[in-house]
Length: 373
Image (cartoon, rainbow, N blue to C red; front, side, top):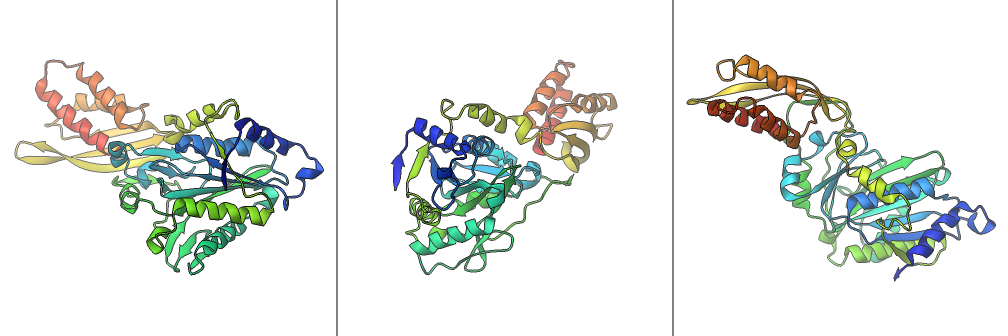
C-alpha cells in the first residue's frame, strides 16, 4: 500500500540504521521501501548516492522505487558520443546523466521503472534481487515467462530484454539497480540510443544492443503502478516487513543534508562529459565550393572532455593556412561541445570583421564541427 510518509520520520528512521542495536541486526525482520516523488534523474541518482554514503545498512536493506522524465543514462566509464544521439537529445530536450555505477547506456521515461536494492556489501546479491522481481511479476501474471540471465538481465519469452543491471560496491555498502520496461517509448529508445558520430576511437565501456519489449505489450494490465505495488509486496514478504511504500522527496535538503550538492555535481558538464575516458576523433566532412564539395579532415584528442590536440585540415585555396592554424590553436583547451564551438566562432569572427566571404566559410566550417560534437 502506498502511504504518505513524514520526511522527518523517514530521515530519523534511516539514521537509525547507524545504531547497531539488537532490533536492527536481523535482516529477516527489518527493511524499508522508498518511492521517490521526483521524476528528475539527477535528484534520484543523488538520493542513491546519499543512501549509499550515509546509511548503515546492517540488518536494514532498502528498496528504492523511482521513475524519470525522458533521459538517457550512461554508465560511469562510458563515452556519450559513442552511446547516443546527443544532437537529437538536445533537440528533444532529453537530459543526459552519468551514473556512478558501471554498465551500459539506458533510456528512461515514465514507462520505465527503476529498482535500487541497497544492502551491506556482504549481503549484495543481484540474482536474489532479480528472482524476487520475477516472483513479483508472476504473482500478478502467472503466465509470464520471465527469466534472469547469467549477465543479470531479465528476458521475456526467452528473447526480449525487459531489464538491465548495474551496481556499485563500496567498502561496506552496496547497491544493485535495474530497469524494468513497462510501457516505455520504444521509438524514442531506439532513436536516442543510436550514435551518429563517426571516427571515434576510445577504450570506454561499450553498450551491447539488445532486442527489447514492454511488459504492457504482453499484457495491457501490467501498468507501472501495478508492477511497483507487486514488487513492493514481494520485497516486504521476503524481508518480513510491513508492506508500506514510503514516499520521499529527494530534493529536501532538510531531510537529506548535502543532497542538492550531489545532484548539482551529477548534472554538471564536468561530471556528465568531463568524466569520459580519453578518446580521439578522426573523421571527415565536406564543405561546398563553387559547383563541387571539398573534403575537410578533422583530428582531435579529447581528455576530460577538453580538446588536447586539434588538426583541422582544409584545402589551402578554400581557407588560408594562417586562418586554419588560428582555428586549430583556438580549439586546444576548450570543451568538446557545440556551445563552446559557437563561442569560439563568434570570437574568431571578430578578428576579421569586414571579410564577409571568410565569415561565410568560417560559419560553414564551424557548423560542421559542431555536428561531430
